[in-house]
Length: 143
Image (spheres, rainbow, N blue to C red):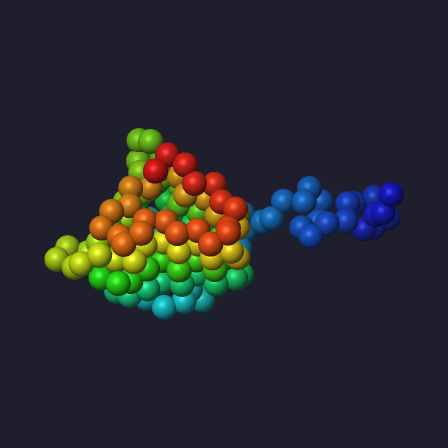
């Protein structure tokens, strides 16, 4: 068997245990990007009003907490090229909807590089498509 050190630690992409770091371990900011590409991993909560498309590129992660409400302007999208974790609950779903008075927003686009994303208990409305997955293997349930 192969070892990483004299202490017989396992070899793996993420070291002992093989699990990727949780977002909290990555220096996540709680200040939301409301348009453009994230420059850090982010955790959103409360009321978020996007002003244009928000893009999540590797290595950044976007985590959306239970009870968060996000309004999205016409034709804007959440464009995910990394990982998104929408963590609503039955008691406190995440709501993503069109901005008041605007037409349809585009939706959540999960690129193939978004594999491993999670969307749970999300109430998505006013979008051209709610969730579009391009060959990404994701955990999408209770929506």
